Image 1: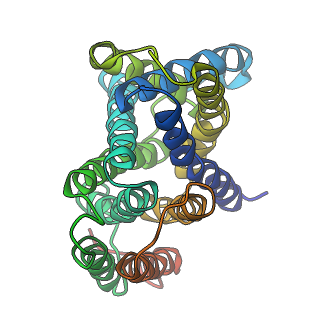
Image 2: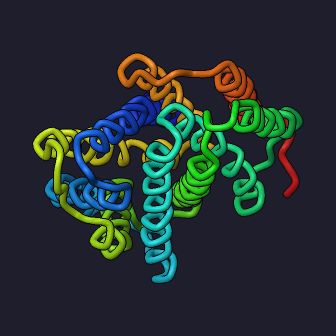
Image 3: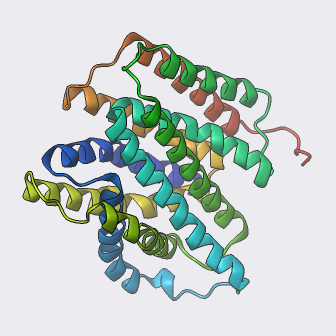
Length: 308
């Protein structure tokens, strides 16, 4: 399978798997008193434990690689780990503070905008003629989604957390693309493992302050859901995600992740009983349509080389 097609397949699986994460976390909130810091910490730690034996047996770990500066080797896992910690924890807080559908749509709708801007500023990736209107359309969709609803339907604190989550996502996305372009001596599995360990270390103190273990509710149900989150949506999905973004444009990879808000919104309505207002639906349609246009702009071949 060609690398680009394989990258799309990897990102499609990761996007669908991640779309179930918010619903699982929402059920964890309902069945226990765990908070977003603790959920993120256990997700990182359990994901790293599950990945460790796979990493130890992976031939890519011992494959010869070109030497890289020490600063670059350290920057990538540390920056990615911090970005993922912000992304996940802020997203889980958004789900708690507003709703699964709105939190996911805002976070993953804003992420391509942040990623496209970062790709232009730091990687020299132009959007093209269709890219700027697409980003403007995405911002318009977010405005309709957030401002068009009645007071109380969308909570500002949850939206702020979703936007912070989008910023963390953009950082990890851009670093993944930078890895594919410049190389760092780390394969996707190694990068994922070290990023999880960094994320767990960053979240340990705030998670302890929040409460690492559930004190009530149904701890067995919460533990089984956390195992699913760690195994499927973390240990399996993240290595595929990093492998995919290494061969695709940063903005295109981010657009592929729109599978997550679509599947998350469907689960929110079908399984969790959330209600989508007219403004939410309209804003979502505008936002996803604009980001789909951005995907087309990013994937269209260019006849002439671009000037930086």
